[in-house]
Length: 540
Image (cartoon, rainbow, N blue to C red; front, top):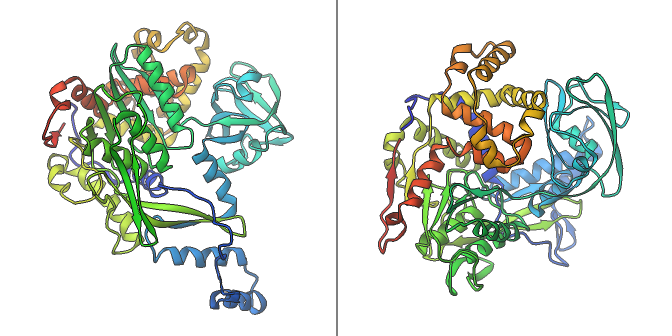
């Protein structure tokens, strides 16, 4: 039982919440290309519309110089503000990156990086990518890209990606500074196609319990899921926890394919229907890789779209327990239509419904701004009144969990969020891993690290000195007396340097109160076998 702060600071919560809104707000259900012969926007019957006529007059006669592309973008976005919250316009420059995320691949040098104090720090070279093959290491600092100095120059994430990403086969030279050395190392890397994995963790929690975390639903998610389940079953898995918290969605087909691996027969998984879209049923059909063992699916307010499709199918067919908090409430299906200028629109063409006919879409009658603001206010209200969250969850939208787990607002968790928001904790752990690379190398697998590495008082004292030296917003006592969640995050950040995200989540989950509550439910077979399930409640 963790101690709660009954009045958590709204300022502390809002940065996290806006991230969830962005993640959930762009979740999509179905993505298709423009049909051949479709008429482009702004034109009707071969005639110029009033909108295009106005834009031409502005271009020809307006007193000041203006960007016509920007004006068109503003006009398009204003149109979408009068539709639903999930129909939107994607500028040509943004479309490639958006598609890369959903397709699960990009072309570049294959690193995860952070920018700390105007310095690009390699968090981890991605497995099998050009950077790992060339010998770049976690903790290396990139000081030059080709002939351009990038250290201490106000570099941004967008500029780094622009310089490092590029077509497969092209080359880029990065100059790095390695810890404990004044020497600079030049690496000429040939860009390659990099696989972005949507399953960021898949490991055993105990001898029989497997854990899989899905970050988004991409083209490769189903294939990744099947491979992960088979590997975990070979390790002895007989029960499965699937974590789709903060998963904003993706391809509908990926979600239904995973549901098909869990649900037997030819059961209905989801159906879609719209004014111009006749009803289309998606049913189970294959012999799934895990149709019999106990299942718990974890959701929260950031689980949207495809995540809700999976949750709705599991819940309606009583295939397992859905644990967490009410999902985002996005029950609209978008179709991608490519435009002549290289951009695209994602237009809502249908609603999707769970097997029992539930539409999960949250109301948006009061407009787009109110839609997102109401979502944020609801999360803050839940955090401030977690003991009565069940009363707040009486609305008829989203997926309401079978096991309700309140938001954790403990002092420990708030401290971690504050530290990570500044980047101080991450930077300390990167440096620690670099300074202790040889001693950490003795841990050849995650289990060895889990049992062998403990957060010592000396490490916490060093962290406190580093934190207080970087920011006056923290005190040494609050760091040195931190609880188990802070210890878990330190271990997780260090494990990430060795075992990537799988190691990160394995260490973090030990102290994640939501994961532990769902784990207890998974072990309690009485919760998993019920002819008439009643929504559970777990308040901490």
